[in-house]
Image (cartoon, rainbow, N blue to C red; front, side, top):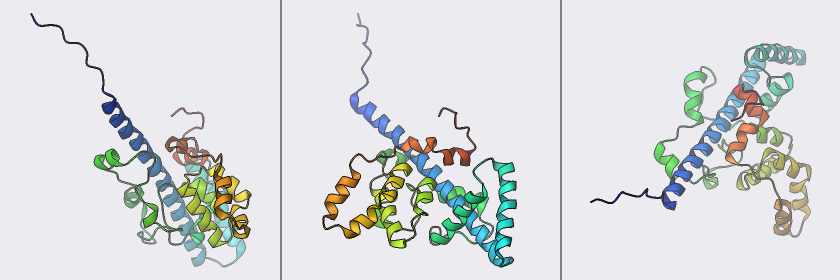
Length: 238
């Protein structure tokens, strides 16, 4: 008489592999959202600059242009496209001119934007450790597109006037996976300026990074700017 088979417990190895797949997939979605929003805002900034250059040179022309554009975009896409927001996008294009090199000036969006943002195969998801980027820092330079740099981070970077200081904060934000709030804190603490004057640069960096706020993959969906971009109510549970 055959004995009844007992339920075989799920092995720890199987659980860990499945967990890594799901966490990496979530991280991939977050990077895709980041990159898509960043590219879209860069392209919006480029369109504004191109239109201004071909229009009147007077300052009031630019003001009226942004006001009208803001009004129409707010009607069609909701909040997030204020005049000040559009000014940030224009500044973003001007301060990071080499961010996206592959797109022609006109006729870009619908087909190409999703392809540029990200396409990740199942095999890449499986073998990409959670939280890591598909773009290693050794192959990246400040001013270039990186999937772990969100629009909220760029908004803080735009406040930094010196290009060398901006590049420093850009690198630090990536290396340490800083949240937008952490990047703002480090900029406000004048970390770059203090390092330039310090004799113990490594010690100062260790102190600056102590207790830092690290961004998790799903934190992107708590970002008000991302929620505005996706037209998702802030109260929606994801």
